[in-house]
Image 1 (cartoon, chains in turn red, purple):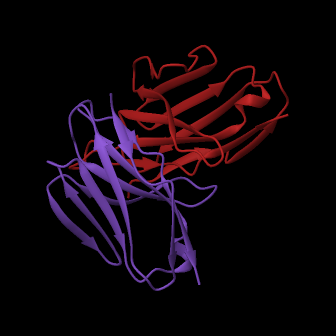
Image 2: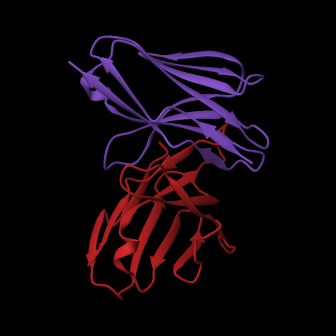
Length: 117
Length: 109
């Protein structure tokens, strides 16, 4: 149980285009999902916390107009990188928290590797 | 501020034992997690400690001392596949996970 999927796993796009990444909790309801970014050889950086039915909470330094987050249902959150540029190339990982469990473990999706040309 | 410290890199020999330490200072405490992350992959859950003491799970064990703000992950009978980064994370008062920078573990034959 507690499986999180992410789609696509890999995307290559031209500079200026927008890219949407989906994060789904497959066998549990996730009222809260998290979006992380990880550059090579660096640790996870939390970008935003996505709460179902409400606006996402963005970490300091993360542009909310550039990284649009929508959490329309208890099993789906999407991250849209708008007008992507080469510096947005990174590994984007989502995680979801299952409040049905005793503790607040985060279950991670497999990640999406974004390359902007 | 909130801070998680762990060594940047460690090297160990196949078959040996290695201990990865993590110290933390956070606003509130709602458990400490250890995750394993292989290069190019997402983190996978290893262990969770919320009470003081040692939690053992096969070749991996995790220890917590809340009074000292200290945890360690102990890996026994090291295998080459254990080469990965090990991330320490603490749940704060808002149940957010505060992440350490990770410890890259290199296993040598």
